[in-house]
Amino acid sequence: MSKPQSVTSVGQSPDEERRDRMTKYLISQIVRVACIILAVFVQGWMMWVFFAGAIFLPYFAVVLANAQGQGKMTTKATAVVAPTLKISADAFTSTIKPEDK
Image (tube, rainbow, N blue to C red):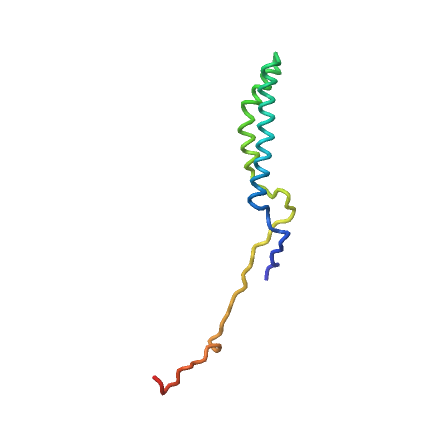
């Protein structure tokens, strides 16, 4: 029989996972805005680096924010095993007498 699942092996709640994704995306977008602002004020090859960051960062921000992983969990959750119920035929006794038929 498998080891029963414990409360500590359960993953993140949907609200916590959504908050973490939103935080990652927000940080990425702040970096993108900084790249746009810096690209306007910087000249030469650095301007192109900042513009490239501003152009390609949205794709990577979405990929990083939506990456599904274990996150803070260090152990893999075990599958929940339902006990098998068995009822033998002996448990049912006939309440109808043969002469009542």
